[in-house]
Amino acid sequence: MEPIIRERFNDEILADARERYGIAADQIHLLDGFESFMFEFVKDGDAFILRLGHGRRRTPDLVHGEVDWINYLADGGAGVARAVLSPNGELVELIPDGQDDYFLATAFVKAQGRPVWQTEQWNETFFGTYGRLLGRIHHLSKSYQPAHSAWQRPPWDAPANLIAHETLQQEGGLVSRHYLDVLAHLQALPRTPDAYGMIHQDAHTGNLFVDEDGRITLFDFDDCVYGHFAYDLAMVLFYAVANHADPDAFAAVFWRAFWRGYQMENQLDPAWLREIAPFMKLREIELYTILMRDYGPENLEHDSWATRYLNGRLQRIEQNVPVVDEAAFLTNEGNL
Image: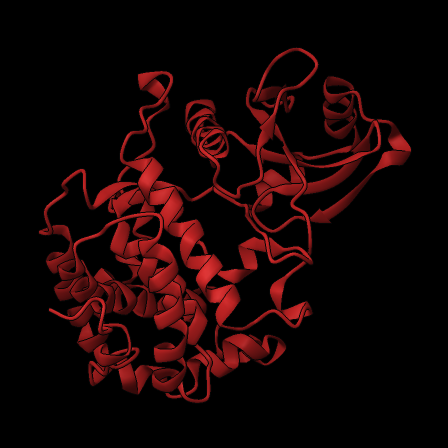
């Protein structure tokens, strides 16, 4: 979070947000403050999430576009955490920050269950359900239109979304060359309605809960964009294998069940599976660059996941080694 945003947040901002949503002072607590201030609260016996973001990061139109799409997906039967109206009938409440800007308050139904790694459900049944969820989202995305044209979210390759572009352009070298090559390839892909639409863009397991019955609820749509469905699939597979001891073997097991579930909800031309590898490479390079830029080697010992991710990563990127062998996800059902 930008220091200036953290500095502008205070008890008065939170009190204003509580008043707008009718939340008792003893029924709310802070969960996280990484990109936005995230709170859990209870009202009338039900649990909700309150997010307080800032106008410096997202405009009201962008946030309206996010929650409009979330509720469209919820109405279509997708397992997502629905946005709820304030007592004033607003999905987005603007709260002045005293500096000619504002915080944006949005509330969501709290997802049922818990992270999958806290359960014993990390198995092929879960992978299939996971695939069905992404398939349902992509199927619904094909017919989605924002309620207002001003609420349209940006494309995946808008400058603000290319999070490592400026850094890599300045650095040069092999990493930059591979990044620019894969970016040019992906930007040249056709953007047809059968394969391109609104996507989550960050649908890894850190952004979902699973309940005791195996139902998955996806949340944190803050980064949703217009993009290729293959990009969404690539992000899921990338984070599933990123630090796995044997990524190729695990990817084959994961993908077989995931793709079977996906095809139950959405039909995507198997030719698009060829683009999963370059989309994963894009994410690999971006994540490597951001971790090195924002943390630096001296601070990475405090993050074991990041340390493991970076181990040997530069050499893999410079040698253009695939994140996983394509054979792992070009399955019998999707071979060309």
